[in-house]
Image (cartoon, rainbow, N blue to C red; front, side, top):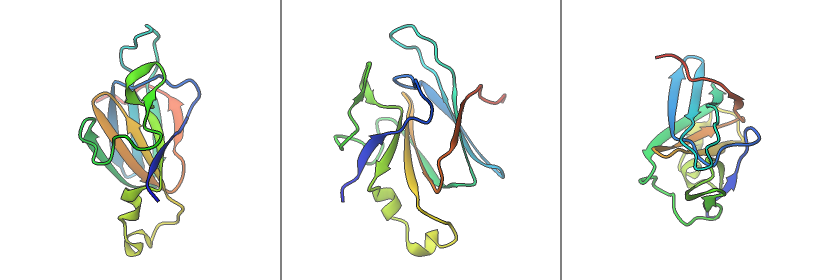
Amino acid sequence: MAHAYRVWEPLPDLPPFFGDYELRDSAAGLTVWLRPGVYPDGREYGTLRLSFGRAALAYRVHEEFSHPRFGPESGADASPAWEWGPHPCMVVEGSEWLAGFSDAQLLEFRGPFTHYFLYTLSNTIDVLANREPSAAWAEPPAE
């Protein structure tokens, strides 16, 4: 099965895109902050915090133009109100990245696994997790 992108709404009323991100991987697990950008409609949005905790088994970050499998795949159409990029939060069904992990690599983790795809104007973030992250509007942590 070829992979396909499906819109994922961790919270209602997401912006059409996020400007940038911050990622922290610590003993408590993985947290991703998606920071707002400057929106064409002038509306202000907050920072979206996605807390995967220890459920994140793997993640990868790419420059937004160099994601290895991003292109004309099903569901990766331009976001409504933003013609230059996809929806900012998606799930990849039939993930080739997930399929690339061996059973031995996943043995200590309980499935099923979900491949989350997060899009910002600067980078794309892929996260493989065995549960949905908690989501909240929040400020990114101080440096």
